Length: 286
Ligand SMILES: Nc1ncnc2c1ncn2[C@@H]1O[C@H](COP(=O)(O)OP(=O)(O)OP(=O)(O)O)[C@@H](O)[C@H]1O
Image (cartoon, rainbow, N blue to C red; front, top):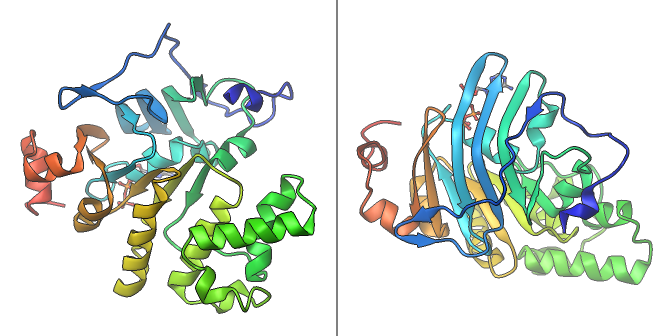
């Protein structure tokens, strides 16, 4: 399917990518089971900023239509990891990536991948809400318009559906022409989620999406994340272990660039297999 991202232009090529080719990606066993039909396969992922290695060979499968949380102390590589999943690290100078990340059977670091399309399929929501200085309507319609949709009725439907899916429609349906910048922080973050949904992604990456919000707004975002998995695969970076335990199905614990443990969330929090995981989730460090 990702073949459609292949272009012959040679644009969007990262300067410093190496990838190991393997015949067929072998599934990873976790807790005695294999993840069936994962949304992404990450294999031997290493990331360097200049000479400094930030990720030391991460291998995991991202379960489809599930929420996967990435936890770990500050500087362990959580943001580096999630940014690799839709090639946001391409924009960072001196960043070298090795290994493979497969999405629907294609290595996203293969030559010729159209990264703009890739990032529509694998959308991203950041820590700080970053709406465009435009109306609520235009924030949502922007992506579909760029993708070539001009019909007003179609755009209206996309705006309504995206806002409904982001649990925001009831709060803003009578003021779609107002500036997005006049919304509360929590509403702005749900708007950014709606904006990501408007281009019909398969996967949504969220880097600390609720950490800048008050508890009520945070709880709305958590409810939303929980519902999103009906239709999307979600990967969320969070400092907040309670949040990881509340919203995620699977949890990955990173420590100093290493994947220490990847497991179903209940199992990881109730019965961690590694001492470092136990020390972290019981608050002994971090
Ligand atoms: N653009 C960059 N240039 C150089 N080093 C970087 C860059 N971004 C991250 N690093 C380094 O890579 C390592 C991992 O950083 P990263 O931001 O991925 O960690 P994190 O777990 O997300 O941290 P935090 O929880 O504090 O956001 C750190 O040592 C960091 O200093």
